[in-house]
Amino acid sequence: MLTERAAWQGERDIVGADGVPCVAVQTLTPVSGEAGEPARVVCVLQDVTERRRQDEKLRRMARLDLLTNLPNRAALEESVDRAVRAAREGEPSALLLLDLDHFNVVNEALGHAVGDRVLVAVASLLSECLDDRHVLARWGGDEFAVVLRGVAADEAVRVTEELQARVSDYRFDLGFEAVALGLSAGVALVDGALEGREVLALADTALYEAKERGSGRVVVLDSSDDARRSEIARTGQWVRRIRDALRHDRLAVHYQPVVDLARGVPVHAEALVRMLNERGGLIPPGEFVPLAERHGLMTAVDRWVLDHVVQHLERHPSRRLFVNLSGTGLEDDGHLGAVEERVRRALIRPSQLVFEVTETAALRDFQRARRWMERLSDLGCGFALDDFGTGFCTFSYLRRLPVDYVKIDRSFVSSVRRDRGDEAMVRAIVAVARAMDKRVIAEGVEDAETAEALTAMGVDLGQGFLWGRPGQAFVEA
Image (cartoon, rainbow, N blue to C red):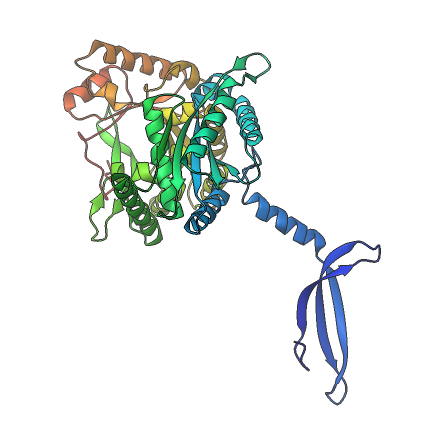
């Protein structure tokens, strides 16, 4: 309300001089006369139509997957919550999680751009099979999700099988080759007994089981399975614990030395994340990292670790630290931008940071992994390819990735003195890395004899329990 002294401002719809409707911010300011009495009001109109249009566009984009133009994960979660509320009013629904079988082969063999074309085509195929009642979303990577409203179990299975048939019967024309793909599906029936996040966890469990059984399978789960509900409850508790750990700083960075094998002295260290329980005890990464990755929390963990590593390096400018990037984080271009910005703001030399990506994650989306490496390398950071030797077509991919270090997987290192095949693999990795001017690190070194053998084979650096387990103290030379 306009008073004698206070201005008033509000938004209103008006018609412009050209007769076109627009949105304006109107400001009314009272002006006093010589005796202090209200004399007049100054009215100012500011056309904010374009700004409102851009704001609305940004709001829509925040809920859309930019590649497929489908609703994204956040929008899907809201749709699941609405389906749960409707189920409690008597309308059953189902949530489908769909995963493209062997899509990684397309990405690895034909490149990220071709893979994106396939994902757009799959989105179109799935959309054609669904009516307006249902919500199709991109869940992430090569996974899609569908909320089927007003359907019982039999109808949910029928629709799922129809979607599978539509994709498997289609040949994706890539210009020079036609590719066939299949779908695995996890189905969670929505009856109102579970909360939205529990329905998502149930569907995720169903999809995991479907893929374990082989390609093109369907697994249906509902809330009546007590064992499943207990598993989901445990998963939900862990997810809440991880969120609480991020919120209340109950994570820790431990350091494991990286040793120069020829001199036997630590030269760098790897920063490894640990989680603390409510009493301050350590929780090993194997218990929380897989869940954080499956439930979209790993990028937040990555950023927490990077922030603390940067603070450490700002206090110790002579040190160099290796930092892991999660495979799920590589799929998020927004995460890449956040990492770049943190490196730019840091009061360190970017060369103090070496980011690690596992070979499996790099091969899953080669073009995207290379983009991460190129952009962070442009800032001056180093890169290491972790768990090397566990993928396929390894050497041909290595020459196309701008990495500085190759970390030989511990499965080859542990038996290198006993297994001639593992010895041959290590020697081959060293020879190829040297030819490409990359340094070699052996992971999982546990005894002096193995360290001596690796040194003789030309391995540059070592890491393992021989020199110490990960701990809070940074081990210096």
